Amino acid sequence: MGQPPDFLTQFRTLYLDGQPVHPESCRVHKSLVLLKLPGIEDMDSALAMKGKVLSIRRDDARLPEGVFFDDELLGLQVVDADTGDSLGELKEVLPYPAHNLYRVVGRREYLIPAVQDVFIVSTDLNANEMRVHMLEGLATDEN
Image 1 (cartoon, helix red, strand yellow):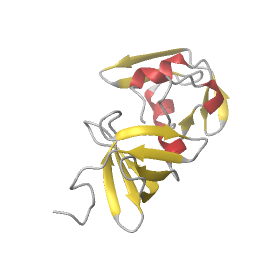
Image 2 (image 1 turned 60 degrees about the vertical axis):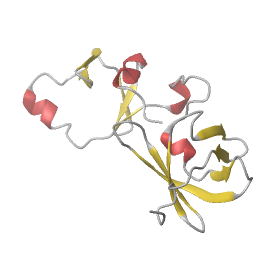
Image 3 (image 1 turned 45 degrees about the vertical axis):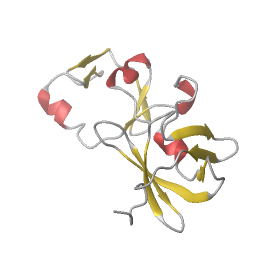
Image 4 (image 1 turned 180 degrees about the vertical axis):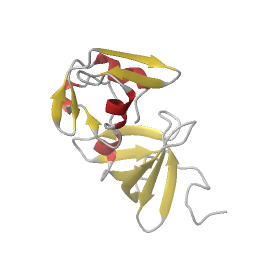
């Protein structure tokens, strides 16, 4: 799942286009992360960073039990927890304001709300499986 903006404030090392960088300061303001990076002293140098990829090392991240990064979920086999039927493969995580939607493609296509304990019963990365509680209307070809 996507992380809140303050998630980035826990890291002492970030990676800018793959190169390690140590933020001089990092805070959240109105749901945005404000970083002060070494060597970035004015608006022109900040604008030069536009389009660069800022990342973290997965090994440095500490997520609560049962919480995963979106890309870790891609490719999971999705199973109806009630019937055991295979629904298909989790192909995409779609961000929406209330919660993400998981796009699952098999014989049909499904958009499953990423709501733990309501739709998502369990996620097991080692078994490559997500078990979901299905409700009528989650298939994209249903009215």
